[in-house]
Image 1 (cartoon, rainbow, N blue to C red):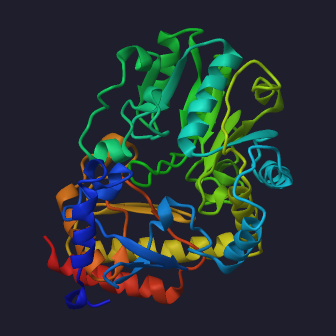
Image 2: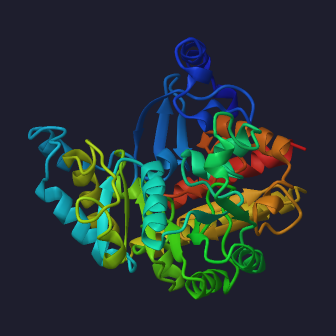
Image 3: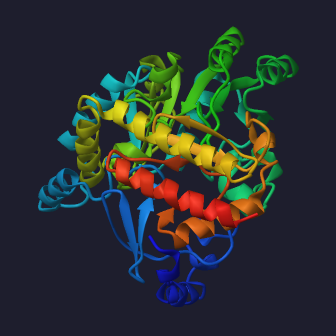
Length: 433
């Protein structure tokens, strides 16, 4: 973890080639390092808490493929299970018993889910659940929150935070105004703004969708009473409450944010972890709502690769590992040690900073104000974050390449990894201004 030994000539060469092959040289925008400067690292392999790039640099990884690697990269038990599954084939396009097994685990873990439908991504889960909300209520409008990201479907690309904020795009060209006309927005943690939207749109709103802990504007936690208030106001107006737990599901508790906070929504979106690192998503909720989904009901949604045996296998093994005693206590302990340590070092080295941490999610903002919503997050010194990110990279620590993304820990992270990360942070924060 010595900055002087850092080199990235091979990464630069590969990325230069990639820019002629793919838009911006990447398959997903935030990977392009637009908001932190420089060019992205090209990974070669991952294992446990670490990633290695094609130049041979090793990093302590706090991105974890954006969340799925909660048990660590290439966990030997997950890999072994996948090897056995590969011998049977990669995709059936037909029912398999593994779907039942993972469905039973998800239903047993997540309080709101009585029935579940597997899809292939968080975006698919969110766009499907929006259709279901509208079908069940017979209403078109939906409330989302500024800075909350629910995938790249047209109707959600309104004040969406994350990659959109990273690229400096207020929304996205190519999205018709008619598509987003039914999407209403409110500041996160502002219950009065939500009540006002219901008052202004009586009997027109199908429901509220939100990240119960925001991960796409940095890590932002709900104020006491906010989630409870959302459920109350939604039900008082005949609307549904949807938790997008693509990030928080099985990460901040085995049963997700709804278990952590004791708030049961009507519907839930899942992803990331339940595929154990393979592409997967899911949505589920009350049985009376889910039975509207085809072929049980009239609301159509389909997917050839949905429930494929590889993703189901990786998800089953990952959830088995997570459900072992002491897992979430360990995740909370190491993440708190990391987050508190980073914040203390920032203050000691003269930087205005604040931060949030909940279980295995964390974030630090370079601002002197507490961050309760996306507007607060936008007060951050993003130029300073870019310098910090580059410095940490050169010291062997891989953080999300955007101020507007949460960080993730895994049970593979050791106390030694946390100590090394804090040593790197002290070195970097002592140098930058």
